[in-house]
Length: 124
Image (cartoon, rainbow, N blue to C red; front, side, top):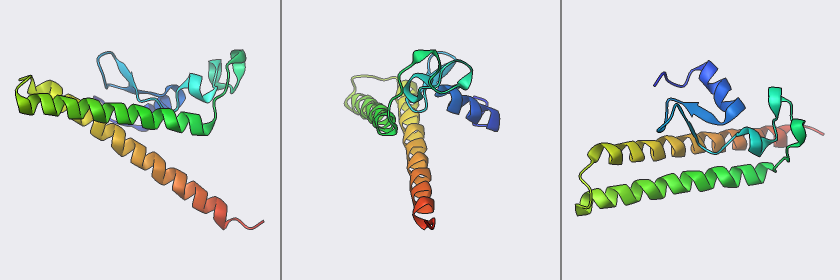
């Protein structure tokens, strides 16, 4: 994994995929994906006739994905604790995925709160 660099962050914001995580080359965390945000080819909003979903819908989808990762991680830990599986590596990977997704969601929440506070400070 190369780490979360500026170029990776830009790529994540454009595609919703974080490089280096998951079974294939990229993994989708469910936020900022081009179909969910209405960004079409070339990064132009609404191009190619794609439907735009609301910010609330995108946020709900992201929270749902984080919740599913947490449930998967909990189930894997429970299976390890009860002896149903002995693959510690898969359990640790599931736990780290859910931890990273939760940390990302907390940072998104913090940015949303900061933006809301900035808007509330504006004089009309």
